[in-house]
Image 1 (cartoon, rainbow, N blue to C red):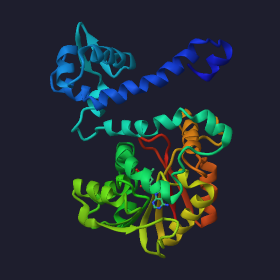
Image 2 (image 1 turned 180 degrees about the horizontal axis):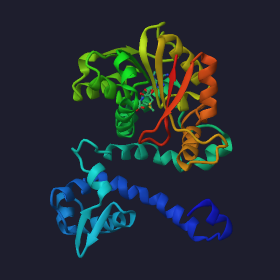
Image 3 (image 1 turned 60 degrees about the horizontal axis):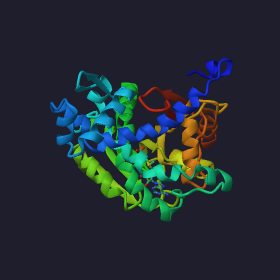
Image 4 (image 1 turned 90 degrees about the vertical axis):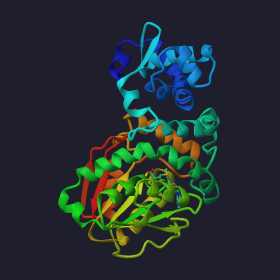
Length: 338
Ligand SMILES: C[S@@+](CC[C@H](N)C(=O)[O-])C[C@H]1O[C@@H](n2cnc3c(N)ncnc32)[C@H](O)[C@@H]1O
């Protein structure tokens, strides 16, 4: 329902629907964990066949399959279930565009979300992942799950850059690299790319695993430590990537990070920022606004920031040009030129 409809014709249905749909996301989590989509892709059609392949009760699987039909993830004909286009493309394990791992992000933070009322009251997070102690425990459990959110967008970003710009990229600094989702897309497309990763020592084994999986492990090397302390160097890189890190760092450390990235870039070098960005009035879109609550729950200083804020911070750091790139991400990517 649009906001306008809400104003002229309010209905309690909307509230009931939101509260139930919120719970319904667990159907997607369970379906991925039980490999339902993959088993259907492998030819299982009835609830009995699917439940056997998934090693789950037929009663349970029946209800779950029907809920997934309600969500549009499955199509039901008679007593047989088929994949809808979105499940066919993104939820069958082993396919290149597989997004299923992303459900583990929901699982990781689900219980914390049930404590939102207390967190809003106190203004204090459930888990402050922007502190080194908690970050080193939390992020190794998160980064593989969010790989699918970033990797497709990273490939799209590379494709969207003018060829002239791409030809110049060789030295890449991937700050807070996590799985390496952003830099791997560049490393696989640029034969002589050299990627430097900055991340915690608990996370770099995961970056290594992903880089090797994509056949670019030999292009990577690692600086393990706290990005607030690590020296990024001067005039060294053609591309610096800040992928989903400023929101958890918050304004003070985020602005410092942009300045450090500027110093680390060669003249004409590019800074790529992937973020979740609300409009300037903070009235939409919905996902960035909800993500702001995620930062309240999980950080001491994190938040979502607007394009105007990013534009201002990039300018104050010295960046000359500011562009955005459309990509399959919650918000456009930011590309700034030194
Ligand atoms: C939300 S993940 C983003 C990972 C990846 N860039 C992406 O977009 O998929 C944040 C990453 O920043 C790293 N990180 C957060 N705070 C850090 C710090 N103070 N020092 C080093 N790494 C940090 C985490 O370990 C994690 O890999």
